[in-house]
Image 1 (tube, rainbow, N blue to C red):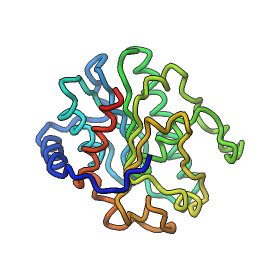
Image 2: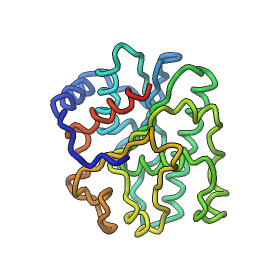
Image 3: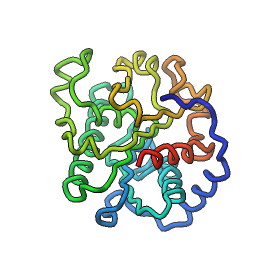
Length: 237
């Protein structure tokens, strides 16, 4: 599902942003409260420092503000998120580290807290990590040697606990093809629980040729789309 219209809830986004930065910072390794109602697993964008990143922080705080009293934990995906796009081997390794961490965390959460629902979120490169992390098997067009280096797919039980996948600024099919990678096509079975937010004219996600991101690509934390994404995720609980 594409959401290419700016969300109108900018005020709520600013409240979420203020709430996020008024709280003590938590490290990605901080253990969430045991068996929360919802665990938000978020992969930050390229070159953001370790943690949830700006977009991820406002998304998580929006989930908590709108969560209706649900306990909502968060987990920042541990991966480099580096900008070494010119070195395809190194970049693939970046993404594989993220895939492995997402799958390990989700499998562990579901094993220890089977009632906890998972919301998977990602911004920019983090959305690429999400797509690969939720693949049930090798895409037909993916070379076998690339697939052989991937971590094992999620178990059926873990996949069933993922109630929503929310992406911000996900690289477009053209961007991915220009970069020599597979387009990020959502499987039909996941379409109803997946939403992609793209600011109009954000050149990373709106179908423009491969290039460095423009100024629009960094506005997801403040334009209201994280609030809309939180509403989407909560509607799937």
